[in-house]
Image (tube, rainbow, N blue to C red; front, side, top):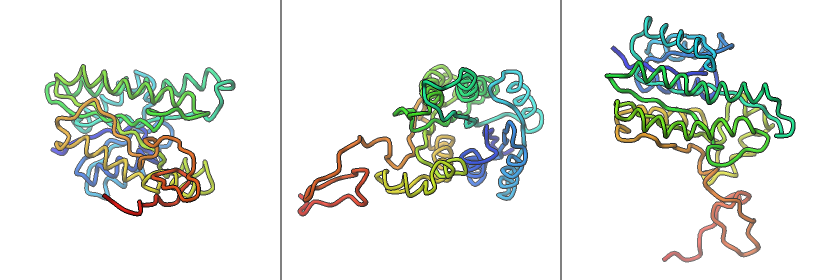
Length: 272
């Protein structure tokens, strides 16, 4: 029997990339969606094209009853789960002054409560066998994102939830880690800027934006035996974007390393 993974919110974007990447790594994948059934079926087709099994499951992860039904359906149709990827997420682009209560509630319910509900059900299913849970965080695990108040709060919560879940579930052989992407080029982020890659790529020390494959490879690592002694950790997949501190641009003749507005870091004239 193949290893079974459930990826929430995988009808498109990073979630689809993770699902397809796990299929490349030999996983059978359950594709969860809330409203985009057509997208979820496209993701499932991608998994099947790679020779793996796929199931399509609808559930709003922010509601306990729907989450319980989803896990029951998966257990009935596929078997015991080995990996959960908590990827489902929403956000509101709005200032703190203008953020509506209902938008705050929706984001916290989906991103943070959904991670809790799915983790709880997955952990119960993994008892006696062990398994892996990977939460998808964000660069705002590390730094705040202006005008993404609810999103930043939810991802900060996921970062700490990862740690407490790792502590409590570790004795049962269940590892819990977090992958925190930075600027990743997907359908949604391309709408944020006419040239998303050109805007964010030069700001990262590695001088490019991320792709969904970068995130998928990090998830596959945490899910593998290569990470069997790793739990409670957050891995930032951001090209160093949120590691470097803001720094003033160099003056004429100065040496600069990784300054955001320099196209290429200059090397010293002489090396030791």
